[in-house]
Amino acid sequence: MSDGTVVRYRAASTTGRTGDDVSDLQQLLGGLYREFGPPKPMGASAPATDRPHFFLHRNFLGEQDLAILFNTKRCRYQCTFCALPAKSSRRWIPADAVTAQFEHVAGELRHSLGVLERVTIANEGSVFDEATFPAEALTEIAGSLRKLPRVRRIVLETRLEFLRRERLDELRELTGKQLNVLTGFETHDPSLREEILGKRQSLESFAGGLDEVAAAGAELTAYVLFKPEPTMTDAEAFAEAEASIDHLQRECERRAIPLQVRLNPMYVARGTVLARRVAEMDDYLPPRLSDVIELAERKRGEGVDVYLGLTSEGLSDDEDTYRSREDFSRSLLKRGIIMNSEAGAVATAPAS
Image (cartoon, rainbow, N blue to C red; front, top):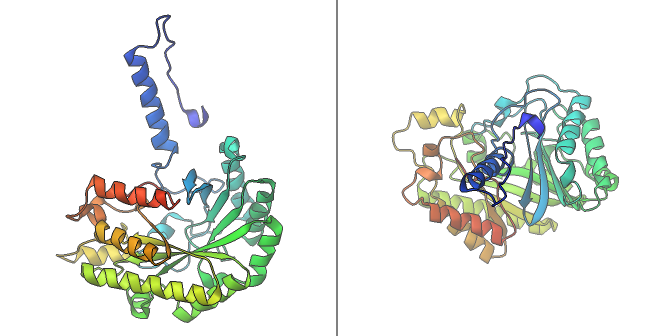
Protein backbone atom coordinates (compact mmCIF):
# COMPACT_ATOMS: atom_id res chain seq x y z
CA MET A 1 0.00 0.00 0.00
CA SER A 2 1.06 3.64 -0.40
CA ASP A 3 3.12 5.55 2.17
CA GLY A 4 4.90 2.39 3.23
CA THR A 5 1.80 0.91 4.87
CA VAL A 6 2.50 -2.70 5.73
CA VAL A 7 -0.47 -5.02 5.60
CA ARG A 8 -0.24 -8.34 7.43
CA TYR A 9 -3.05 -10.64 6.39
CA ARG A 10 -2.87 -14.32 7.25
CA ALA A 11 -4.30 -16.74 4.72
CA ALA A 12 -7.49 -18.40 5.84
CA SER A 13 -7.35 -22.09 6.54
CA THR A 14 -9.47 -24.54 4.61
CA THR A 15 -12.00 -24.37 7.42
CA GLY A 16 -12.31 -20.58 7.24
CA ARG A 17 -10.84 -17.60 9.06
CA THR A 18 -10.17 -17.82 12.76
CA GLY A 19 -11.21 -15.26 15.35
CA ASP A 20 -7.63 -13.94 15.36
CA ASP A 21 -7.76 -13.44 11.58
CA VAL A 22 -10.92 -11.37 11.91
CA SER A 23 -9.30 -9.33 14.67
CA ASP A 24 -6.27 -8.67 12.47
CA LEU A 25 -8.50 -7.43 9.67
CA GLN A 26 -10.50 -5.26 12.03
CA GLN A 27 -7.29 -3.75 13.37
CA LEU A 28 -6.09 -3.11 9.83
CA LEU A 29 -9.28 -1.38 8.76
CA GLY A 30 -9.55 0.55 12.01
CA GLY A 31 -6.00 1.81 11.65
CA LEU A 32 -6.51 2.79 8.01
CA TYR A 33 -9.75 4.59 8.88
CA ARG A 34 -8.07 6.60 11.64
CA GLU A 35 -5.09 7.46 9.44
CA PHE A 36 -6.84 8.22 6.16
CA GLY A 37 -10.55 8.70 7.00
CA PRO A 38 -12.45 11.52 8.75
CA PRO A 39 -10.52 11.16 12.05
CA LYS A 40 -7.17 11.83 10.33
CA PRO A 41 -5.18 14.63 12.03
CA MET A 42 -5.54 18.15 10.62
CA GLY A 43 -3.13 20.13 12.76
CA ALA A 44 0.26 19.14 11.36
CA SER A 45 2.26 21.21 8.89
CA ALA A 46 2.99 19.88 5.42
CA PRO A 47 6.31 17.99 5.21
CA ALA A 48 7.41 19.75 2.00
CA THR A 49 6.37 22.58 -0.30
CA ASP A 50 4.97 20.11 -2.85
CA ARG A 51 2.62 18.56 -0.29
CA PRO A 52 -0.60 20.07 1.13
CA HIS A 53 -1.26 20.40 4.84
CA PHE A 54 -4.31 18.16 4.62
CA PHE A 55 -6.71 16.50 2.20
CA LEU A 56 -9.72 14.26 2.63
CA HIS A 57 -12.39 12.67 0.47
CA ARG A 58 -15.48 12.97 2.63
CA ASN A 59 -19.26 12.92 2.56
CA PHE A 60 -20.16 16.55 3.21
CA LEU A 61 -23.44 18.40 2.79
CA GLY A 62 -24.82 15.34 1.03
CA GLU A 63 -22.07 15.51 -1.58
CA GLN A 64 -18.87 13.59 -2.22
CA ASP A 65 -16.35 16.32 -1.40
CA LEU A 66 -12.60 16.54 -1.79
CA ALA A 67 -11.29 19.02 0.79
CA ILE A 68 -7.73 20.31 0.34
CA LEU A 69 -5.80 22.65 2.64
CA PHE A 70 -3.00 23.89 0.43
CA ASN A 71 0.44 24.73 1.78
CA THR A 72 1.06 28.37 0.84
CA LYS A 73 2.47 31.48 2.44
CA ARG A 74 0.64 32.10 5.70
CA CYS A 75 -2.37 34.35 6.15
CA ARG A 76 -1.36 37.96 6.75
CA TYR A 77 -4.09 38.75 9.30
CA GLN A 78 -3.25 36.62 12.36
CA CYS A 79 -6.64 36.84 14.10
CA THR A 80 -6.33 36.51 17.87
CA PHE A 81 -8.31 33.26 18.09
CA CYS A 82 -6.80 31.49 15.08
CA ALA A 83 -3.76 29.19 15.21
CA LEU A 84 -3.95 28.02 11.60
CA PRO A 85 -1.42 30.48 10.09
CA ALA A 86 1.26 29.27 12.50
CA LYS A 87 1.68 26.03 10.58
CA SER A 88 2.02 27.75 7.21
CA SER A 89 5.16 29.08 5.58
CA ARG A 90 6.55 32.55 6.20
CA ARG A 91 7.97 32.42 2.69
CA TRP A 92 6.38 32.50 -0.72
CA ILE A 93 5.59 29.08 -2.17
CA PRO A 94 5.66 29.27 -5.98
CA ALA A 95 2.87 28.26 -8.31
CA ASP A 96 4.56 25.09 -9.54
CA ALA A 97 4.87 23.78 -5.98
CA VAL A 98 1.22 24.55 -5.22
CA THR A 99 0.16 22.83 -8.44
CA ALA A 100 2.34 19.86 -7.46
CA GLN A 101 0.38 19.63 -4.21
CA PHE A 102 -2.81 19.19 -6.20
CA GLU A 103 -1.17 16.63 -8.47
CA HIS A 104 -0.16 14.66 -5.37
CA VAL A 105 -3.73 14.69 -4.03
CA ALA A 106 -5.18 13.67 -7.40
CA GLY A 107 -2.75 10.76 -7.56
CA GLU A 108 -3.52 9.62 -4.03
CA LEU A 109 -7.28 9.76 -4.65
CA ARG A 110 -7.27 8.61 -8.26
CA HIS A 111 -9.89 5.93 -7.56
CA SER A 112 -12.26 8.58 -6.15
CA LEU A 113 -12.11 11.05 -9.03
CA GLY A 114 -15.11 9.54 -10.77
CA VAL A 115 -17.45 10.04 -7.81
CA LEU A 116 -16.44 13.51 -6.60
CA GLU A 117 -19.28 16.04 -6.68
CA ARG A 118 -17.62 18.96 -4.95
CA VAL A 119 -14.07 20.23 -4.36
CA THR A 120 -13.12 22.55 -1.49
CA ILE A 121 -10.00 24.67 -2.03
CA ALA A 122 -8.51 26.35 1.05
CA ASN A 123 -5.12 27.39 2.40
CA GLU A 124 -5.71 28.33 6.05
CA GLY A 125 -6.24 31.88 4.80
CA SER A 126 -7.60 33.34 1.57
CA VAL A 127 -7.15 31.62 -1.77
CA PHE A 128 -7.93 34.91 -3.54
CA ASP A 129 -5.13 36.73 -1.70
CA GLU A 130 -2.55 36.74 -4.48
CA ALA A 131 0.17 37.65 -1.97
CA THR A 132 -0.21 34.20 -0.42
CA PHE A 133 -1.82 31.92 -3.03
CA PRO A 134 -0.39 32.17 -6.58
CA ALA A 135 -3.19 33.27 -8.90
CA GLU A 136 -1.89 31.15 -11.77
CA ALA A 137 -1.95 28.05 -9.58
CA LEU A 138 -5.55 28.67 -8.55
CA THR A 139 -6.52 29.16 -12.18
CA GLU A 140 -4.80 25.95 -13.29
CA ILE A 141 -6.15 23.85 -10.42
CA ALA A 142 -9.71 25.12 -10.77
CA GLY A 143 -9.60 24.80 -14.55
CA SER A 144 -8.54 21.17 -14.33
CA LEU A 145 -11.75 20.34 -12.48
CA ARG A 146 -13.66 20.73 -15.74
CA LYS A 147 -12.37 17.23 -16.50
CA LEU A 148 -14.34 15.80 -13.55
CA PRO A 149 -17.89 15.67 -14.93
CA ARG A 150 -19.62 14.78 -11.65
CA VAL A 151 -18.16 17.79 -9.82
CA ARG A 152 -20.92 20.39 -9.63
CA ARG A 153 -19.57 22.82 -7.06
CA ILE A 154 -16.20 24.38 -6.19
CA VAL A 155 -15.87 25.86 -2.71
CA LEU A 156 -13.25 28.60 -2.33
CA GLU A 157 -12.24 29.81 1.14
CA THR A 158 -11.30 33.48 1.42
CA ARG A 159 -11.81 36.75 3.20
CA LEU A 160 -14.34 38.74 1.23
CA GLU A 161 -12.20 41.83 0.66
CA PHE A 162 -10.16 39.83 -1.87
CA LEU A 163 -13.19 39.05 -4.04
CA ARG A 164 -13.73 40.61 -7.43
CA ARG A 165 -16.67 39.77 -9.63
CA GLU A 166 -14.42 39.56 -12.69
CA ARG A 167 -12.23 36.91 -11.07
CA LEU A 168 -15.22 34.87 -9.93
CA ASP A 169 -16.73 35.13 -13.41
CA GLU A 170 -13.43 33.98 -14.91
CA LEU A 171 -13.30 30.88 -12.71
CA ARG A 172 -16.95 30.03 -13.28
CA GLU A 173 -16.52 30.23 -17.05
CA LEU A 174 -13.25 28.30 -16.89
CA THR A 175 -14.64 25.48 -14.79
CA GLY A 176 -18.30 25.34 -15.74
CA LYS A 177 -19.09 24.76 -12.05
CA GLN A 178 -21.16 26.53 -9.39
CA LEU A 179 -18.91 28.58 -7.10
CA ASN A 180 -19.39 28.70 -3.34
CA VAL A 181 -17.45 31.25 -1.30
CA LEU A 182 -16.50 30.03 2.19
CA THR A 183 -15.62 32.75 4.69
CA GLY A 184 -15.30 33.54 8.37
CA PHE A 185 -17.93 36.10 9.38
CA GLU A 186 -17.70 35.17 13.08
CA THR A 187 -19.88 37.95 14.56
CA HIS A 188 -21.96 41.00 13.63
CA ASP A 189 -20.63 43.01 16.59
CA PRO A 190 -17.98 45.56 15.44
CA SER A 191 -16.35 45.69 18.88
CA LEU A 192 -16.02 41.92 19.10
CA ARG A 193 -14.73 41.73 15.53
CA GLU A 194 -11.93 44.24 16.04
CA GLU A 195 -11.08 44.42 19.74
CA ILE A 196 -11.53 40.76 20.67
CA LEU A 197 -11.06 38.73 17.49
CA GLY A 198 -8.70 41.04 15.63
CA LYS A 199 -10.49 40.47 12.31
CA ARG A 200 -9.36 43.78 10.79
CA GLN A 201 -12.43 43.67 8.57
CA SER A 202 -15.26 46.14 9.01
CA LEU A 203 -18.87 45.21 8.41
CA GLU A 204 -18.80 47.63 5.49
CA SER A 205 -15.89 45.74 3.94
CA PHE A 206 -17.70 42.45 4.45
CA ALA A 207 -20.84 43.89 2.85
CA GLY A 208 -18.78 45.01 -0.14
CA GLY A 209 -17.60 41.44 -0.55
CA LEU A 210 -21.18 40.23 -0.44
CA ASP A 211 -21.91 42.55 -3.36
CA GLU A 212 -19.18 40.78 -5.36
CA VAL A 213 -20.57 37.35 -4.41
CA ALA A 214 -24.04 38.41 -5.53
CA ALA A 215 -22.85 39.96 -8.79
CA ALA A 216 -21.08 36.73 -9.73
CA GLY A 217 -24.06 34.52 -8.88
CA ALA A 218 -22.05 32.63 -6.27
CA GLU A 219 -23.22 30.98 -3.05
CA LEU A 220 -21.99 31.83 0.44
CA THR A 221 -21.02 29.63 3.36
CA ALA A 222 -20.15 31.65 6.47
CA TYR A 223 -18.71 30.71 9.84
CA VAL A 224 -20.39 32.15 12.93
CA LEU A 225 -18.69 31.78 16.31
CA PHE A 226 -20.69 30.76 19.36
CA LYS A 227 -19.19 32.63 22.35
CA PRO A 228 -16.46 34.73 20.66
CA GLU A 229 -15.83 36.64 23.90
CA PRO A 230 -14.58 34.34 26.70
CA THR A 231 -16.27 36.34 29.48
CA MET A 232 -19.74 35.93 27.99
CA THR A 233 -22.37 34.04 29.92
CA ASP A 234 -24.09 31.15 28.17
CA ALA A 235 -27.19 33.30 27.67
CA GLU A 236 -25.15 36.17 26.22
CA ALA A 237 -23.34 33.80 23.87
CA PHE A 238 -26.63 32.38 22.62
CA ALA A 239 -28.12 35.82 21.98
CA GLU A 240 -24.99 37.11 20.25
CA ALA A 241 -24.70 34.13 17.90
CA GLU A 242 -28.40 34.36 17.03
CA ALA A 243 -28.07 38.06 16.23
CA SER A 244 -25.06 37.33 14.01
CA ILE A 245 -26.93 34.67 12.06
CA ASP A 246 -29.92 36.99 11.67
CA HIS A 247 -27.62 39.76 10.38
CA LEU A 248 -26.10 37.42 7.80
CA GLN A 249 -29.48 36.16 6.70
CA ARG A 250 -30.81 39.69 6.16
CA GLU A 251 -27.75 40.79 4.19
CA CYS A 252 -27.84 37.71 1.96
CA GLU A 253 -31.60 37.90 1.41
CA ARG A 254 -31.22 41.50 0.23
CA ARG A 255 -28.73 40.32 -2.39
CA ALA A 256 -30.41 36.99 -3.26
CA ILE A 257 -27.32 35.07 -2.15
CA PRO A 258 -27.92 31.43 -1.17
CA LEU A 259 -26.58 31.22 2.40
CA GLN A 260 -25.36 28.40 4.57
CA VAL A 261 -24.09 28.96 8.11
CA ARG A 262 -21.55 26.84 9.93
CA LEU A 263 -22.13 27.48 13.63
CA ASN A 264 -18.81 26.98 15.41
CA PRO A 265 -18.64 26.59 19.19
CA MET A 266 -15.52 28.54 20.17
CA TYR A 267 -12.50 26.50 21.21
CA VAL A 268 -9.22 27.82 22.59
CA ALA A 269 -6.48 27.07 20.07
CA ARG A 270 -3.05 26.51 21.57
CA GLY A 271 -0.51 29.32 21.10
CA THR A 272 -3.02 32.06 20.31
CA VAL A 273 -3.65 35.43 21.91
CA LEU A 274 -6.97 33.99 23.05
CA ALA A 275 -5.19 31.08 24.74
CA ARG A 276 -2.95 33.45 26.69
CA ARG A 277 -5.95 35.47 27.77
CA VAL A 278 -7.91 32.41 28.88
CA ALA A 279 -4.89 31.12 30.81
CA GLU A 280 -5.14 34.20 33.02
CA MET A 281 -8.83 33.62 33.74
CA ASP A 282 -10.00 31.58 36.71
CA ASP A 283 -13.54 31.02 35.53
CA TYR A 284 -13.42 30.47 31.75
CA LEU A 285 -16.12 28.19 30.40
CA PRO A 286 -16.31 27.07 26.75
CA PRO A 287 -19.72 27.02 25.06
CA ARG A 288 -22.25 24.34 25.91
CA LEU A 289 -22.92 22.01 23.01
CA SER A 290 -26.57 21.78 24.03
CA ASP A 291 -26.91 25.54 23.51
CA VAL A 292 -25.24 25.36 20.10
CA ILE A 293 -27.58 22.58 19.01
CA GLU A 294 -30.62 24.46 20.34
CA LEU A 295 -29.73 27.58 18.37
CA ALA A 296 -29.08 25.64 15.18
CA GLU A 297 -32.44 23.89 15.52
CA ARG A 298 -34.20 27.22 16.10
CA LYS A 299 -32.62 28.83 13.04
CA ARG A 300 -33.38 25.82 10.88
CA GLY A 301 -36.98 26.13 11.97
CA GLU A 302 -36.88 29.70 10.64
CA GLY A 303 -35.56 28.52 7.28
CA VAL A 304 -31.85 29.24 7.75
CA ASP A 305 -29.52 26.51 6.48
CA VAL A 306 -27.29 25.81 9.51
CA TYR A 307 -24.91 23.01 10.37
CA LEU A 308 -22.58 22.51 13.31
CA GLY A 309 -18.80 22.76 13.43
CA LEU A 310 -17.94 19.89 15.75
CA THR A 311 -14.18 19.84 15.26
CA SER A 312 -11.31 21.66 16.93
CA GLU A 313 -9.07 20.63 14.02
CA GLY A 314 -6.53 19.14 16.42
CA LEU A 315 -5.65 22.64 17.67
CA SER A 316 -7.18 22.54 21.15
CA ASP A 317 -7.23 20.38 24.26
CA ASP A 318 -10.49 18.86 25.46
CA GLU A 319 -10.71 21.14 28.49
CA ASP A 320 -10.83 24.14 26.16
CA THR A 321 -13.72 22.83 24.04
CA TYR A 322 -17.39 22.07 24.58
CA ARG A 323 -16.33 18.63 25.83
CA SER A 324 -15.40 20.08 29.22
CA ARG A 325 -18.87 21.46 30.02
CA GLU A 326 -21.29 19.76 32.39
CA ASP A 327 -23.85 19.12 29.66
CA PHE A 328 -21.51 17.15 27.43
CA SER A 329 -22.11 13.48 26.78
CA ARG A 330 -21.56 11.02 23.97
CA SER A 331 -25.29 10.97 23.35
CA LEU A 332 -25.35 14.77 22.99
CA LEU A 333 -22.45 14.64 20.54
CA LYS A 334 -24.24 11.91 18.61
CA ARG A 335 -27.29 14.16 18.48
CA GLY A 336 -25.18 16.88 16.88
CA ILE A 337 -23.67 14.47 14.37
CA ILE A 338 -27.09 13.09 13.46
CA MET A 339 -28.42 16.62 13.15
CA ASN A 340 -25.72 17.38 10.60
CA SER A 341 -26.28 14.17 8.66
CA GLU A 342 -30.04 14.69 8.53
CA ALA A 343 -29.43 18.06 6.91
CA GLY A 344 -27.03 16.49 4.43
CA ALA A 345 -24.15 18.15 6.26
CA VAL A 346 -21.76 15.60 7.71
CA ALA A 347 -19.12 17.57 9.56
CA THR A 348 -15.50 16.56 9.87
CA ALA A 349 -14.32 14.52 12.82
CA PRO A 350 -15.52 15.74 16.24
CA ALA A 351 -13.16 17.60 18.53
CA SER A 352 -10.63 15.30 20.12
